[in-house]
Length: 217
Image (tube, rainbow, N blue to C red; front, side, top):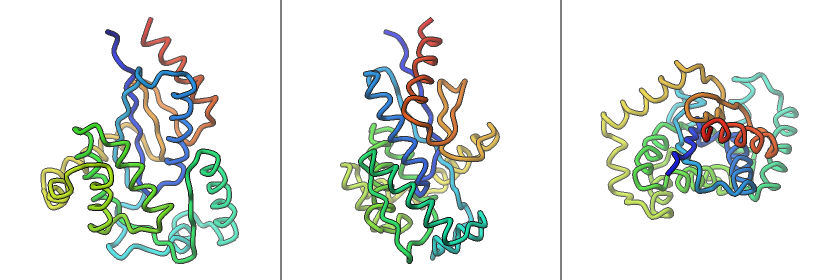
């Protein structure tokens, strides 16, 4: 039996282009009919590792971090909303939206890996943040997300204060930074080649075909 194509997706829960990128990748995989030939693992990256507990208004945050005016932000949000809609995902931007700390979400995504529910939880958390106006740093929201995908909420939440679990995420984040990942999504194939950004579906199909050809030869 041939090995599956290992795909690492380095991303953050509150990164809109990560969601669009994954949805396009998913569509490419589906259109090529290779669902059973790939193995996806989500890797942690915090867009805002120093984000305080109370979070920050999304407009203020983006202006501060990227220098974008409100008008530019609204235009960008419109583009993302349309791209999401094409892929069956709802981006519901609103004026009081807050960027939040995602470190705990990454601990839970690592926890979900062993049960094969990592992608399900990732999508649940992303939906909670972008579609349902929920704070994904709030433990009640995290608990609900775990329950929604059929994971043991008590077991998962217990890891949030576990030093070993915290250290594991920090080390993984550092590993990908050391590998040169400084923007997300970064999608890595067999730990050999990578694509950054939310590429169009046909680009993902082309890359997948090339990588599969190499790994099967």
